[in-house]
Image (cartoon, rainbow, N blue to C red; front, side, top):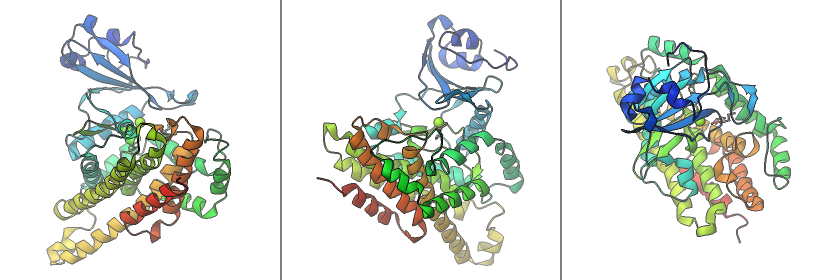
Length: 423
Ligand code: SR1
Ligand code: MG
């Protein structure tokens, strides 16, 4: 296939004929297409994903569709998100080597990326629902966030390069628009595509939508999201965008990448650990999940600590950009000034991270795009109980974020809310 053909969606039946002459794919899986086995495995909200196995290996072929798969062709979505995903993956690999799948080929006109098949990896969300404790995720994700978020910013990059990159990713308008609406606005009014566990949550939802402080806070966070072009974000860093084995962790799916606030990726990620925590009560049919709950809170502590430590290390060793330049601090013998600025910056990330986490929790329960942590709880009363606790927690950390000073404080609150009304 050349890159010049008009876009055409792949299917299990056409993939071998269409990609059989692709050198990159053939070099990884073998060129005898009669031995190729193709499976469509995409269960995400937006794209087609195929696993192609050949005589000598396997690969993933991911293709964007010209619409939102979750909703259908009534919601068109540009193919160029595949371009942003490809460019984000190359930058993430450069800034945090080994943290993303290897890219074999990118075809812009077909909006497809051929990449490494991660096996035996599974989606982190699924592992957490199953009650599996992965020992390395806090370290791996904490390092990934610190390295990509620091090295993609004006703290590290030459400002000319950062501005060029900022311009490139500024065109990812439609995916930003999804986040701007689905995360920051839709949950807080009766938007058309919203849904929630009803009638169980009806009165709580009405209360939240009438909560002026919460609405104002959500809009302040949206303002930060839209106006603070601090670094290249993953943009959708939830537990469904991470693949794991017992010892390995890889980040996938950065099609929402754009220049935004450092705190956004961190907040979205931690929100997903806190949602996993609140959903555990719904997955206790095979035994109590007390140790899993403790593990999940430990993961939030460790992820934040690894992020902070690595970010601080990079601040001291790789601060080569135009912000807080060493010529003003260390070079003047003012190491303490640089530390004071670092403290200030981490404090801002902390405060905003809590806000982003709070609204992420809300949108997964009140908006269009729910998550499997809660959705797989078949008993609706039990699901609603878990969701109600998460909503309460999300509201507290979003609205009171400036008064919360440590992750232990956040986790004590989570544990308290989780224990409420337990028999
Ligand atoms: C219409 S897309 C809904 C959600 O799916 C993606 O994974 C993002 O999280 C987006 O908000
Ligand atoms: Mg995705």
